[in-house]
Image 1: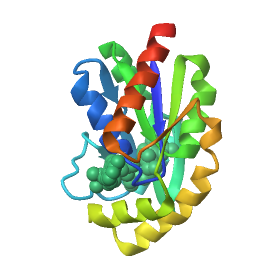
Image 2: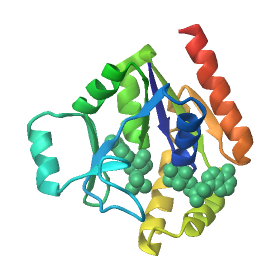
Image 3: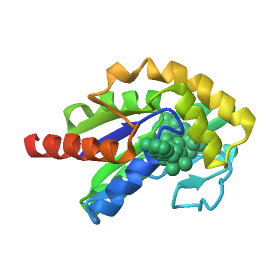
Image 4: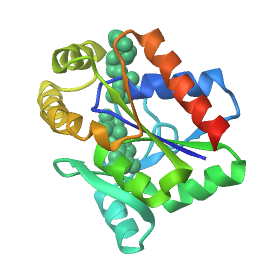
Length: 187
Ligand code: ADP
Ligand code: 5GP
């Protein structure tokens, strides 16, 4: 089973993913993407991302190692390695994807009914801006890029199976769980 969570950066995707991983230990495994961006804060190679160089990333592209990849922000690559899907399938766990909106739509097209796609929406662009500033680990320039992209990404929300508005966090967590549990029961 495959669950695709997409949202504009800062909407609370990582918070939701952590909630699912902590609430259902042994059930879900997060697909770790490869990226050419530098680690932020306490991020570690092999935990949040596989942090690789642009040259390494481009070699993986040439080798056809990615199921999908994007240049999400100027010059920065993000992608899902096929080997990551094999790794999680061999554990027998539900795969959680935390990826950008375009990547999420691509994966839903690839996996069809085997995947549940959920868009996590911020209550507003202003709230998103406040959260990105409060998180305190992203430069002002990057925040402005993310906000500009968020407005475009919000327009793609209707392409997803479900939309969860992350306003009150506990309400959003509960509705995410309800959507997933109901999908699992019916598939
Ligand atoms: P993303 O993974 O989508 O970039 P995060 O999960 O890192 O987003 O959330 C961005 C920031 O907003 C974090 O500091 C997080 O603690 C905070 N946050 C998440 N959900 C809420 C919410 N419902 N209300 C207020 N702050 C939130
Ligand atoms: P961040 O730099 O905040 O960790 O991530 C920036 C954006 O890249 C987020 O929207 C995140 O979901 C997205 N992203 C992370 N991994 C992947 C991936 O493998 N593929 C795609 N298409 N986007 C990704």
